[in-house]
Length: 463
Image (cartoon, rainbow, N blue to C red; front, side, top):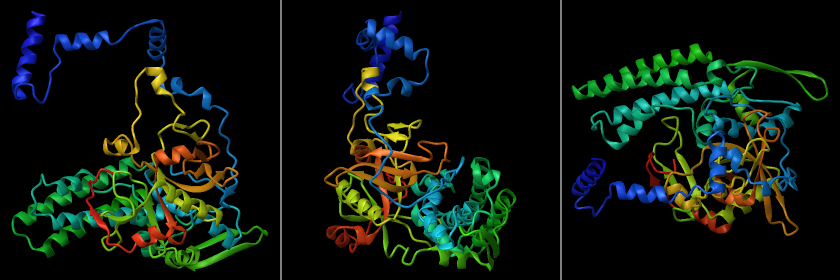
């Protein structure tokens, strides 16, 4: 009876797939062959005994040959100090953008410690993203619900993720403030519940707007409903985060022991004073290593921004060697960089070290897992998952990079005292993008910046 069942299912599957030309079901013969491929010899049984009693496969795959071989010393290091903590939020892009600027603030005001209020900027990031979402809903109000863009919009109306251009959009519009002016709250540190309610409210508003449009509602009426929806979002944010100040007074003690005060400052005035001259998209560009696309081309992700009038995510795709050369030049000039990578890959969190051979899963499991960077991207096995500040590089006697260092935003207890050391080989495999001063780029890269950006959709596989 069992054999008949297997054979019937296999025949049925073959018939459904055009006689088996495009698919093959698992019948008894196939399952028997797969089972025979697993040979429970002594070493296999030993590994099985370990893995069935220890859930941490990564710990068992730790490559002993890598232990003690990578230190945390660097020939070139940007003058940075202090570690921030984004807690349980997706604001790494915001923390990283601000961490690049923190050393300059400490030097300007002669203070030992400083942090920005991420809560302040986060409030405006979410309200602006909410407005952009509802404007997109109005624009697509008569588009089919299963249209790819509409589906993408409703899948995630707003979230707390982003990239450097989002920081520029919001900070240049609303300014920034010191951390003590608008401290973190439970919901800025742990954003999931609040964002869930914001998105529920936005989806309700969006469905009503689509319903109104379907009945011939005028654009003015749709925008009136949008504003009512934004009132609801503002209320949720104000209750969970507090209201942002329109002006503030900041008292601090400098390194000489003097108590100083910035009185009746506005966030925009403070932003203007702490932002280095020229720190704008006119002088800085995101560079990316994406081997699935042509190099020396500029790309723009359509509608990837947080404010309606803000700039989209734009980047220049470059070979790995060009990116490393520019990054080293920036570090030598004492300028830290916004960077993002696939942080969890081959990362020993206890030591704060990343290397492509840190975990030897192949020897442990007897299964090959190696893929090219391009294949990992196209198969969704790898992609940028976290932003950090690139601050250091160690080189050999020929000035060839050997390893690099991130300043992270997971607190001082994470990694190596809050920092992550990663080898140059890891850089090649899992680093994706940097924001860098254009002056550090080579001639060919600068020429590419003059070309018209290639347009990419929001649902592109890299984003």
